[in-house]
Length: 509
Image 1: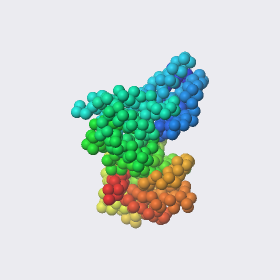
Image 2: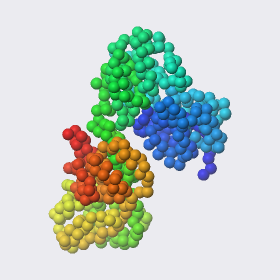
Image 3: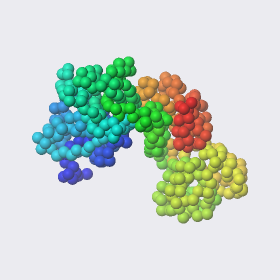
């Protein structure tokens, strides 16, 4: 596709925010989607890169004071990429022009006559302090903020800071990236008459599920940091506002804060699950073990679609069944009018919601969201000689159709979709597994269990057995147990929301 003039030779400096992917701006996301090249730093949440699915990704980050590439080379890389008529996103943690060396890159781009745009990001002092529950200003405690770099790019021993004037400020002092220089920072502030009892907070990995906070004073925080072996990245907040943390704390007190929960369901169906976990403070880790695709053969479903008026009932057991059924209905130039007089049955509120989204009324939703409960509900009706249609996955349990037949009904079971194991890399998951950094693995169907187990070798299965397993319901639980997994969590309500509540209850105990 031909680029417009506006998209040729253009560098966009984008602030990725302090860590939480949800704090990326809409404008930043828009440019990532359009990018040809993304040049990103160490502190950028790499999950953000999913928005740049078609871009070349180039890592130029600096970790533990060591750069993978010099700033001059980064400047040249930006210029050379832009001169190839590329849309180049320079992605930086926090805000690109607050201690992000964005100003230096802008100077280089301007000198090279390269068009550039700046997309601000939420700076780490703002985002991290908010997630730490520490308001940087407060009418009773601080009316000014000083933001100071705690690192020294020149490598000299002393920070180039006017300590004498900074130490006399009555507002809040915020030091970025000062973990290694914390003793020096404290020493200089006390030397220039800052009260040693001034409250101090050090926040590590702010706005992420790895966030951790330590509270002390100028005279105690260095000992705390040494004892706790505090490592970068950190933000240090100094001032009376730190005392408000006990009142304003909200993120670190969330019920699943700091827990890593693996989500194994299909990627296209994981968004709401992931959001609910994030809202409770967990770190969701998507490791899809299932993918839904059309059936190998549409003929059985097509035959039923041509004779919908012959059926007394239509049964949906999943959102996928609803999706593929309605999609095929449209492809065959038919619509919901074909279902006039047909009773609709749905297992679970999400499946019911999907049906209602088609402007179709659902007649029966069972009390419990499993086939056995639906059988009980249907059994209250006189279904002898009634005919049902069940569009479902190619492979599924047969208890529902078999029982309905035993009750005197006839039922056409037709494949509307099939589930397969996605072709994706296992490296990130195995890295987490080897690091023992996974708290819970969730399964929302039997297929997610079997596909998950099939992807792992015996040694990794042994490691999995040490991790808490959470299953959405008894059917999935049985599959997991048949695969040799110990299931610790099964909700009373067989929904994703119920599963998350059960996980919360487990950790409360």
